Amino acid sequence: MTVIAFSLFMTTRIFLVTLFFSFFLKINGLKVKSSFFCNNCGAESPKWIGKCPSCQEWNTYNEEIIEKKTIHEEKEMMWKSSKKGKVIPKKLDEIGTLSTQRINTLDAELNRVLGGGLVFGSIILVGGQPGIGKSTLLLQLALKQKIKVLYVSGEESEEQIKMRANRIGNNNSDCFIYTDINVNNILKEAIKLSPEVIIIDSIQTLVSPFIDSTPGSVSQVRECTGELQRFAKETNISVFIIGHITKEGGIAGPKLLEHIVDVVLQFEGDQHYSYRILRTLKNRFGSTDEIGIYAMDVHGLREISNPSELLISPDDGHLSGSSIAASVEGMRPLLIETQALVSPSIYGTPQRSATGFDLRRLSMLLAVLEKRCGLPFGQNDVFLNIAGGIKVTDPSIDLAVVTALISSLQDIHVSKKICFAGEVGLSGEIRPVSRVEQRIQEAARLGFDTIFISAYKSELLSKKNFGLEVRLLSKIDDLLKEVFA
Ligand code: TYD
Ligand code: MG
Image (cartoon, rainbow, N blue to C red; front, side, top):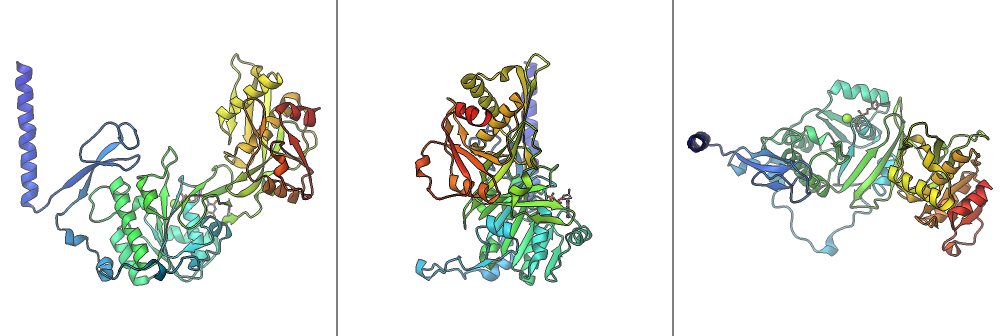
């Protein structure tokens, strides 16, 4: 009885407090509108829900205030009203193509990932973990140009940016630095300055004055990106946006951001190594198979046009446990060194550890070697490492991994003039991989003697002389006979 009376009392109290607040806000001419957003995928809901129906994640909904005032006219910004009514429907034939309207960024790697240069009026999102070099990459881009660039930073002061620019060394007299976080002010300045490229560092620091939530919240990020996108399309100015990455590896803020922008680039690499890879995740103006490779040194990022030469260590002649994979990253052939260490297990359960390679795939390859070749990996600890801090997802590296494992187990040296390209199947068969000819040509260019590939459909390979010996394997047992006999 007491419990019911108490809960009735509490409900009435909450009701009265809510009534009072809504009355108070009304007499002040304010109407606070809030909504709930999933901070994983950006889905919106009018009420709190435990499990997101869109991305199936639990406990990701947060309340955010989305509008401060009821007066919608205020939303009409200066740059928008000035352009209002100018866009009319056009016939498809009357619209010019974009192919000729590209800016050469003077950075061969960036041009490559953008699909041949920067398209006018495009909006590009550059994501990456903190400290990986996003600000350096884009400031360097701004300094290299011979065109007018506006670099907007909400993260660093003008002096900090100047220090970084001094470190990089280049100078563009038409590079303007602006430190503000209000998207409305930024766009007003951009209209006055009319640069060809705008760089925003970073989207998580920007705020729109029409939204009351904190910078970096889903609704702020979405609104600011939306404003920038409309601005880019109406003024034909290209906009680069830097975005931080969440712990899970996705670009922080809603997935929706990726839908709004034209190009999504991801900057990745291991902080302990100097190599950085710029990958295209989405590109409305080109292929998503391209990668750009850089190295971070004391004067900023250096373009690496010939990565294979850097990723392979010189042949010592007697060391076991290493082999070279002719892999392909994006569309670029890349020869990578794989290293394995197999040693008797001291503790009960053997350890397995992999850097730059999927641990489950390593377990699978060990099981195949154990079952099909009878090799005793079950009693050994196994450590695998891909050189240069590179993460490889190309399955063609399997054959080189298997070779390195056997080489370490049997302590037999494998010559560094031999490379491998093949996927290993569950029954121990060597499966063919894509772009075989490109891999063979790259191996020949780098002076390899021999390449091992899958025998399957090898008759489709062109009969020309590649300048190195191409040897065929159909089963994993063939590898033992041909390389370790
Ligand atoms: P930064 O561009 O600030 O990373 P992000 O914007 O992605 O957070 O890069 C920071 C790192 O780069 C920092 O650890 C220092 C290093 N760095 C160099 O090694 N050389 C250089 O010339 C510059 C400018 C930075
Ligand atoms: Mg930065």
